[in-house]
Length: 130
Image (cartoon, rainbow, N blue to C red):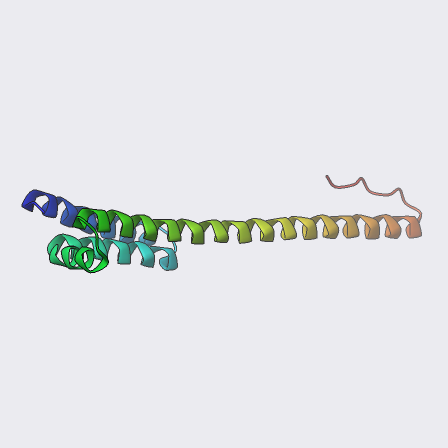
């Protein structure tokens, strides 16, 4: 790995950590979510400072070149992160649906009670909330 590429990777990893800390400070990202990205940037930093790690891992797993191992590793990690994010979005969408149904039931219940109270007092029923 060339010195220029190593410097670019180190700068990119440090910039990612600074960006994450700034996002957490401005409440744009939860701390739990940012832990993955901090660990990700630390792995990039380690591989850029010590490229021998990638060489040893690629030899151990039988890759022809360390870059192939690095690409496969990062693709695998990002696919796992994408899967976890998709699962979380699905869970949140289900929860939003449940909450919307509960709000609709509560509004209907409120309307029916208001209507019953108005009939008991002989008044005109209130208009239904939309």
